Length: 329
Ligand code: TRP
Image 1: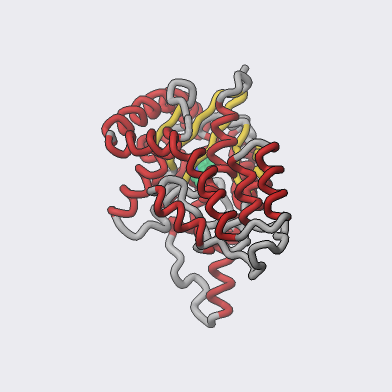
Image 2 (image 1 turned 60 degrees about the vertical axis):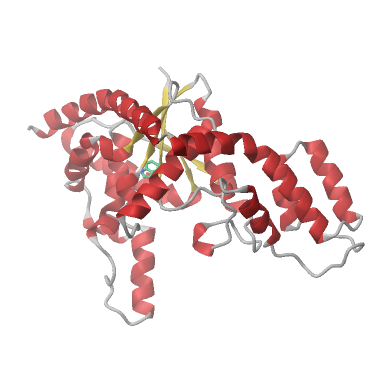
């Protein structure tokens, strides 16, 4: 039997280069393998813990959905759906919360970080925490366990959530008999090393991202904002600089070597950034066209997601029925 790969993408911001090279591209490549059956979904109900308005939800939801389609996700091959279209997830979420010790949620990194911050600021420990944030890992366990998932490709920051899902599956299986498949994380360590404008990890929380799909002009402006040292034209540049690291992502090994040599030979930062813009834009342009097409045809996106949810719900129904039987309802 094919192994099932499942991952959720939270629509809490515009997709950036870190997301693309760290998560989107590898996940799409994985989905092409005959060894696996892929379930990729947009975790819109997880995003509720951070989004501020209906407008943000819609904006980011379509940005992410159109991004995945534009980057080559094949909806005939991947079961691609919207989390909120699968009511079974939320029923399972409730069931699982009854086999989840509260202490396990107290130890979740995201929650703990807020508590620690509150304590440092002499605030009440749960200040600003709602139950959505607190129960977030249980909903994620439901996403995973509902589909008999074998592998979950995620970034390092999600590793603990996979462990929690396994803990929850174990306590359910112990109490009610073998019901859930044990998922394994497929951790993309590399996600952490993609650098942003300031040389730190590219991340929305650092405000140092380069958005994947924007106008050429904005792309150019972002690239011009990359922080460099003050070496003058003619002075050799460091091969380890951000401009070089980003350049490599878009070109063949040969082109990368040529560019690196130019930097070592003293290419000016201005010229280097111009060349980076050119290769980035060459790489992104064909995908950007598709992205713009989907943005202009949201009804097609909705329809694809509806079909995906229909396929996903066949499996979801089967597993949930088994769960309900196990607990005696
Ligand atoms: N929590 C994940 C993130 O922030 C998104 C997510 C929700 C997810 N449900 C999932 C990832 C299930 C993998 C599997 O990135």
